[in-house]
Image (tube, rainbow, N blue to C red; front, side):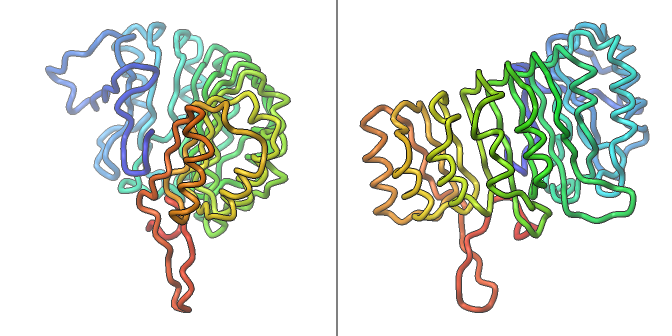
Length: 332
């Protein structure tokens, strides 16, 4: 899985290849259009070319109808500009990118721009314009208040082909969680949401996850990741009784503030022995609880990831350590 510090190295099973800016293009031999995931992005503040101009050159340089995957990197300055021109370029190109099956919107590392500060927009027009799209991921900020820059929006939509949806954030708003849960996504197999922290705009509540946890609109869902959350214990308790879990192969509650309380609720809920994998890495579990989780699931063949990873409680000066999420206000 990608982390906040990494660029994608592949997408849709294809290796990522950065399409060169015009000033760097001389002598570069381009691969076949369908042989790579084309990455369009550049180092912040150093580009000599607008993102959309690079995109237009790509569409002209290769057979655009054969492009299968595109990775959108930095556009302008993502900290103080919405990607409106990126969105417009993709909407205008929909009749040319007829083979597009996978799109990553915001392949931006924490070093390039903190995730909490990435301006975003309503991304559902992309889904409507590309009905054959099978994979869509977006990295988005929520809390950084810059005039004219808005957080991610995902109102209720329908898409019949989408198999994989990933939303990475340091703080998802409740309306995004509700929008995803209210969407009709009959082909979706993998759903991954990074919920984040209240200090970064993550105002979602357990009630906002109701549409997802019911599974009513997700008949083919096999992998569910509700990650990077300050309310990981509450999520674990809700998941323990959620109808969607019965159909899952993989359950991921990693990167958050999971403690013994949440793990106890998870073990006390519905059976999880049908899972192929339970991912709880980056957690705050005691060693006795780790042993309980392993003892309950590993004999049934469930792969369990209990690695505490870089989880480290923070002391705000009052002597009381507070668990922190992996990608949130304490990471910058």
